[in-house]
Image 1 (cartoon, rainbow, N blue to C red):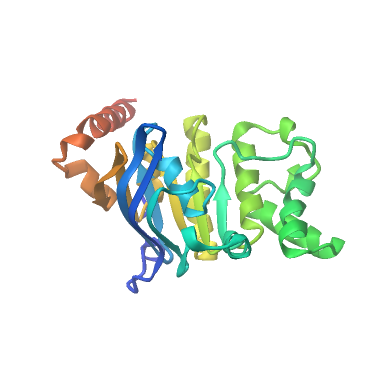
Image 2 (cartoon, rainbow, N blue to C red):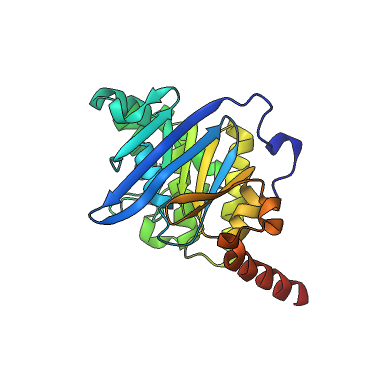
Length: 266
């Protein structure tokens, strides 16, 4: 688990994301119901919960891919719902979003996929600089050899890694990971978990990791928020999930404890 001294939330509790009273509904269905949440500089915050509890909607509201209905969302000191187009564009350059499906362009090589945000967002066109940044990002995820391949030639886990590399190439202050281990086998999932830990260690990023995978939470989290039907049902260290008496968590954790027992017997 994330227990090393260098991998804990720092003593100085500077909020880089502050959410208060966040509401979001789609037609008659309420997705988020008054969510309060803080992300502190340098920590990995895991937002855990079953599918359909509003986890992905939450992080999409943070960078206004989805417009919230009510509440305050402050990111790096800026109130996101009030930002104009230019202000939102500048903020998004500081916040990396790793999509669940990697969001790579199938018609581009891996090099071209990684060069694209550098050209579009930073106006970098020098071939030498582009190559240095592309190869450094690929080295971060251990996939330098894929530079001239296309996404269709890669496994699901490799695509996840390339998606993270493309997000990191702009050196964001904040990382938002949407279900980073979804659809992956246990070994590949663990590789992605360790990659997120290494990203935090190397770059000092502040991250929100959206997942329903408790093993992912155990490996990566400095702190866990559990969402249940659009509300925060738990906020604290991972260890607290194992001892909490909150009935909302009982079924979720019972399944995890069963799997841990099965693995121990193998």
